[in-house]
Length: 437
Image 1 (cartoon, rainbow, N blue to C red):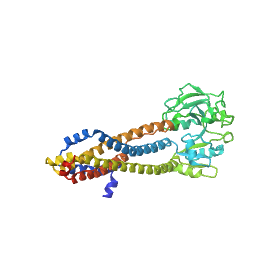
Image 2: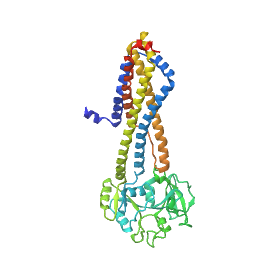
Image 3: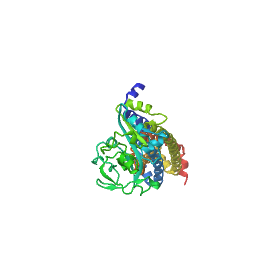
Image 4: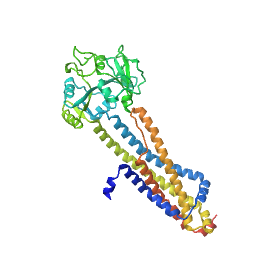
């Protein structure tokens, strides 16, 4: 049996688990309602106690929305951050914090990172299996867009074919990210620094012209402006990275003697195994080589611990809400005791009364669960859009099997617990209830 389960595709396993979690509720419903159709009386009870029913449904929906929204949001955040780092195979930077270097080089968060010299860059670029060694030089900005110095090869790697225009071919040209509010042909003057530390007049008189726009990447690079790294060096009064015989074309080869330095280098190898060899070779006392994906995995592990805590809190909330709803139903059945006793006095079987009470509870639980699932996904979608706008990381919260499994388990458990008020309603003496006023 275990071998059969393992041989099933993931989708089939998830579907089977969903129905297994939902099965207790379905079996309970079939056994309870077998031979009865209490729908007319059920509609009457719902209409008569409309606002009470709405209150119960809102409570249930809120608890389900919290749990499903949390899981969907966390999964969307995990997928979005991983997609944003997908193009960054290996990063080489000066020794320090891998997280800080990753946030700066991959997610363009302002950071003060030591520079790697020209000899280091040359050693990396001349490695046998290296297909791309692109300097990533940051520190300037335009409005809220970081201005990043790099090479034409990096632009091609990050965007593929451009959405429009061409890659820069001179030191005063630039390529805009997909979300940068500049059109082809526009010019701009970069500011030194970011945010509150920006110096708008530091580069007065120096202009870049937009020659192209990248395809959307779903990452902070969509709001970045990419310029030749030579331009970044020149605007800061440094050598241009080439000797006196330079043709003026941006990009490698660079001359180590004229290479001012770069905070980070993106390295891409021809073979996957070569990336690991390069990571080992350049993890030294002078350089730090790391895989952004591995750093993200550690961060996601920490995020997963937080998710587990939040999921536990959400589950506790659902249990408390379910207990409150069921307690309220027990009290409501006491208020309906005289009508239920009248049904039994008119000849209604005990099982019919049991089925009616259980159906009332199951209807509230099922409606609240369905609405809660929809609310949770809607809330996660709205939050994802807000987070995407603030971080420039494309985050999509989508309905997945974890949410469906959570909802199925919650519904089955609460439907089984709904048998309690139905049993308590049968234990009351009809004669005593009919005599009561």
